[in-house]
Length: 132
Length: 129
Image (cartoon, rainbow over all chains, first blue to last red; front, top):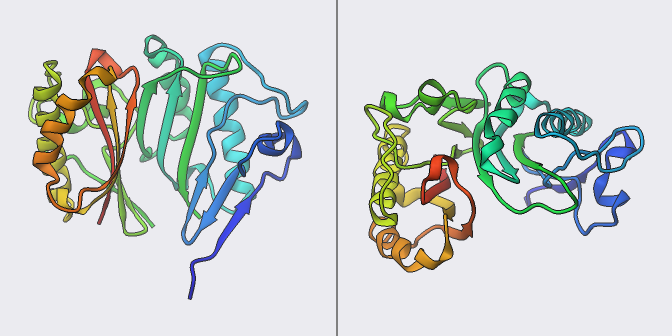
């Protein structure tokens, strides 16, 4: 039997950045027992607009939105197995890490952090793989 | 079901060593997801900055320790994101890389990014459990 593959979307439509920004991706895809999320930048959950700010504020907004998206799909942050954090400069690693740890209090996922060029004035982008 | 894979040697536990909020590796769904591996001494956790060559050797040796302890191996690598500080040393990385995955090497993407602590190389890998 072929593995089931389906797109997932957030219950809050303002957080469907794929649709709102007319981008060729789904917010996430469930395939078998995994959920793969598209990279998320800070988006305001009311207006649905990009919400650039400090690294700390962006990290907090992204992970809050990520929790909502995973919960919409029947998963949770506790089910995340791997996170990739993209940050505009590794100099701000500690600012990201300090907020990040609040969202994964127990047995945090595996993680890779690297400094890359992001677009739209975003300082942080986060993607993850979670168990469905 | 998601299991934490404990660090087989204390130096590999970057959460304890450096406060990085991450587990070394997680087993889930038949795969092992590893945190980005850099050139640190597996016993002391000391950062071993060096050439692309020396860092890559240390990284692969660390991955070998980790995967072997988890019942997997370098032969079971599935996907690798090979992060390098500058693509100009791509060939140098390849020369070391081939030595560790000579047969049916994993899928790989090489990325030129800024890595923590001024390291030149980092390997972000997924292996089959």
